[in-house]
Length: 254
Ligand SMILES: Nc1ncnc2c1ncn2[C@@H]1O[C@H](COP(=O)(O)OP(=O)(O)OP(=O)(O)O)[C@@H](O)[C@H]1O
Image 1: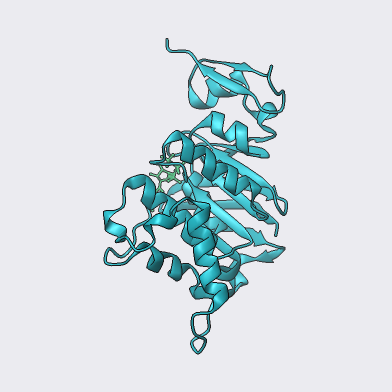
Image 2 (image 1 turned 60 degrees about the horizontal axis):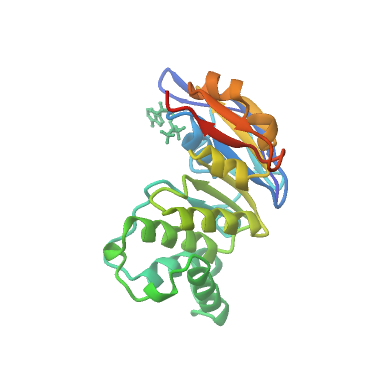
């Protein structure tokens, strides 16, 4: 399913937070969303996922304005891994994943073999099978993050929005989770702070700065020394030697 945003504007009171944001992500593509703190990445993901309404402009999933898609249908198609998502404390890991199946179940249908397979597969995909019966509140930060990603996978969405999914994860799991997202047969938009990971795993990268799109293209097109200086205020060397399409950034310590 494609995701398209046209001229999105959103703000609170008199403050404009997103100005005229447009983007287009094709079926199966992984778009990285980068930008400094407060540039509007989470706000944009919330608008795209239909959790907030734009003041003007439209967000479309598969050509349909998300404002017009019924909530349940939207939940069958779209999963959102939010930053610092909380979960009711008194549940097991498996229960958290079971919640991901809710949009696919009717009030009358019982727990099906397909539901069970989706939960088991999602737990395995994030390497958490061994924690199935553990109480959610006893998990480490990185394990919680992986369980939230697994819940989104269990939802079997066609589109996935992820806000800093590598938060709290060790380097092995950062790479594994992004590889998993890239290889899934779905459309994804991922907000990331680690620019080298964005370069490694995203098909294209969109850069937000003060609520505006300042660049969008392949990692090689977008992640230039000039852009890093102007948008992120850092000095860095960008090397294209190993793979010109996937630049590597070396930040200067000072
Ligand atoms: N409900 C709100 N009320 C007031 N200000 C808000 C609200 N939501 C977001 N903002 C402001 O909008 C700006 C963008 O916030 P947002 O969380 O989208 O940025 P971000 O790029 O995801 O940041 P970070 O990288 O720090 O997670 C910030 O300055 C934030 O303080």
